[in-house]
Image 1: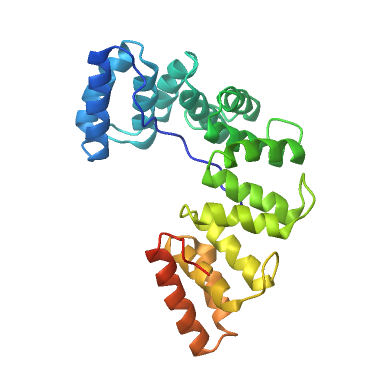
Image 2 (image 1 turned 180 degrees about the vertical axis):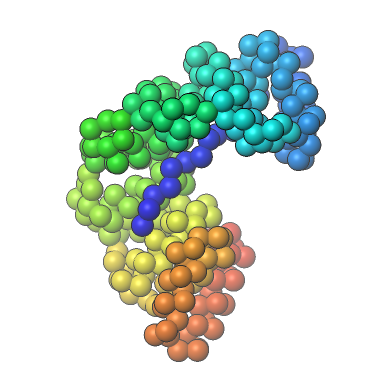
Length: 270
């Protein structure tokens, strides 16, 4: 399965020290979370223009995603860069993401790696996951599965769902580690419990094939169903495929289990 690279990160914590500026930042955050992007922009732009790295990162995010402003990748890059050059880890990861995907700048994997690494070395989980992805694919660096595993693990152990799913895939495929299906299942499950649809579909495959778990077509259907309900196309596709060799009673049981699993916030899923 394709591993998805983490999207640009939004700074959700107060990053300014001066009380008045902190208040402005928090007011902007409250407005943003309420969907009032224009007010958030009014609060954050002055902070960004005064040199606050958190405000600069968030203003970049708004231009990146067209929230309260016309989407403008080049302008997003400008603000991310100002934050990144001050050592802001989220800004560094986001700037790396822009270089990685050629948004607002010429695509440059090596430059992306440089910024991801700066963020990763500060403990930023998105930077660590993204740097791991670059090593796994050999984008901007020499392909190195062991190095990819190392960075995925750093982020996964901090609870990053993308990294947990990616680490699960490394164990599943034996890339950079000794193949270990049971370990793959453990990491997929951690990510699945955080609503990661890719990991949920991956668990479906593990149960369908009996890799690292006792083969169980009902549980496999449950995870494919949950993944599909979350918008993962492969989850919906595999649910349809697996139903062709299931009885109506098994399908009904799987649907009950899926509802129970989702109602329990993915804690009662066996």
